[in-house]
Image (cartoon, rainbow, N blue to C red; front, side, top):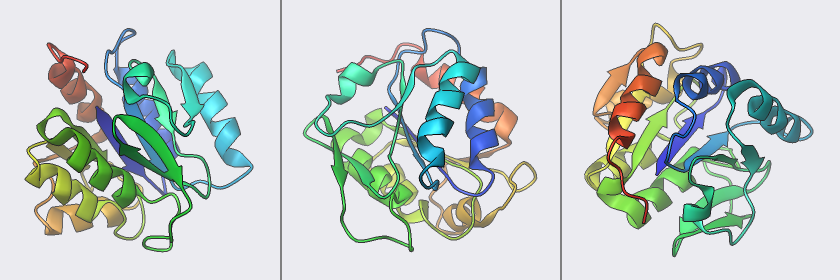
Length: 189
């Protein structure tokens, strides 16, 4: 499973990563982007048209393995988490003044997938996602933070770097190819 979190500057960063992944990329991609209504549905539709990936908002209870090869996005004002192999949408309290919060997704992915997870923390203000990225790293997953030079705002990735949560700090142009190399030979359970 690939989990991606982003905020300010995130739409362009996510687009660039998805465009660098080949058609037939086999893994589920779970996305938390700090975006509000009414833009979220339009953004998912736009990404769908720009990338060749099926991009849709998460549906509560959907099996994660049913989302293989697609991008599933947290809807506005709902946390996206994984429990028991299924996507769950919650209205739990905000984290870092955010709902959806990247930390909520990343922490659940760490518990659910451990070393079978990869997570990318991209451009954005604040610190959302840093603790969750650390949880994934501690669980044996692959963790990536976007580098300062390619970030619109280096807040969230910087916080992850300060926590030593990022196994790799990469320019945006290298993140997609790195995910491709990780996906080769991956088995979807």
